[in-house]
Length: 124
Image 1 (cartoon, rainbow, N blue to C red):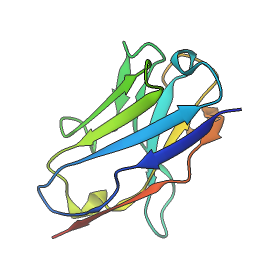
Image 2 (image 1 turned 180 degrees about the vertical axis):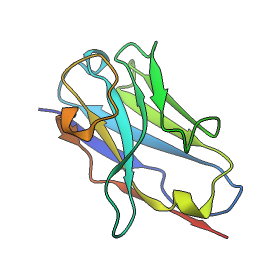
Image 3 (image 1 turned 90 degrees about the vertical axis):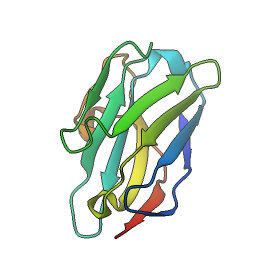
């Protein structure tokens, strides 16, 4: 079993930056790929970024490429999502997820564990 706890969500103005954190516990974190997804009211859950267990491979949604950076610190069992140049359309609940495999995936069904989410609101 893996427990994931997100933090760092906030209200920020357009053009601003935030860093989200995802603290993991319960199993060997370095063997698990980690992903960030987001869900806005009335919309489906959307892939944002993913990182492999070692951190060597990353994948991003086109909508955030060049603005967001995913990273991880396996020594601290923590993943991060650095978000820059935020836009109002980035407003959503951001959830981190982990899967029992090292490889990245943009499909939420491949993730076994989910956090509760943290709210990011970007004002115009």
